[in-house]
Length: 124
Image (cartoon, rainbow, N blue to C red; front, top):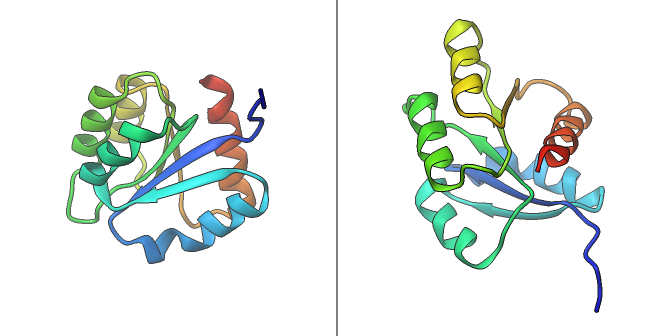
């Protein structure tokens, strides 16, 4: 029996071209990465595969709160890294309400985002 030692990451983004650099970066660092287009497709992936961490890129027209709430309702224990430029008290309340959730600004370096993913996987 082989023990899997890599961290499994599900990247949820309606526009996969936005997150391809992150996916390539994580894959090059021995993460096992699956991608899906939105929360509806996340259900399909999660029916056959269980990640250690989910990375959510909220839709621009959507309220990040609503997407985090739905994701947390579906999978309450899987840590979520939210790539969002938003900040302020509303985001802090969302992060506390939907823990384990960690926000990170998408303009940060890929290495920084990877370190947040690594820290989140330790929460699992």
